[in-house]
Length: 272
Image (cartoon, rainbow, N blue to C red; front, side, top):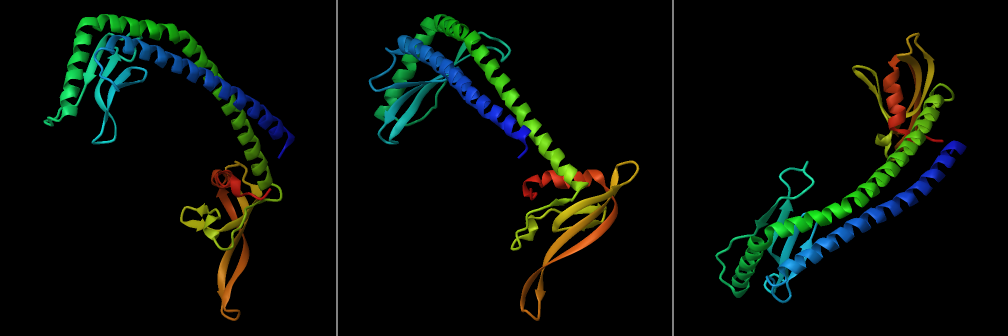
């Protein structure tokens, strides 16, 4: 590992710690906003709910739930969606209801019908107040949340740029090897299919490449003359077992972009 990469990674570690704190701040603001919504909904709908009912609140939805012995979990009674006309609008202006229909006449379902009716009555009486209070809460958290997200996105962008810088340094180092001693790949003799392959011609693919080296480039720089070491497992009838063999071949005027792609795509397999 180069000293420059080591220094960049130290900066990334510090920035990732800072990013985690920013995520906690953003999450804390969102959590406080949900808590404010919940408090508001509980105040408006407490008389519509029966003992044991719970509210599950998200940014724009509130779910009324009640425990069902038959299903052994809290089933949804009704949900409300406080929403705006368009995603472009900041303020909500309507409340949409959603609930399932059934021909089940069990005590649970009959009581659910009662709760749905009570919730509907609250909406009829206090719809405008609920929407206004929802928008007021949303407005009070908008700027703090916006700032937290901007800070978080800025740090994410900074980390991505640093990681990209490391990637470019590593790619350059590997490509420089091509024109020097060559690039050699790790070999698993039991699984040669993991080794890279290269189209040296449109109808000719060289497989199981162990090492590749550029001998010279064409004047345009678009193609290169290369030396390739391939490997194989061949059955030796005298020894009565597979024998690992290598073979060195040279190819002229191979597309440089194909060579570079082979090396960078298989960078994790390169022997340092």
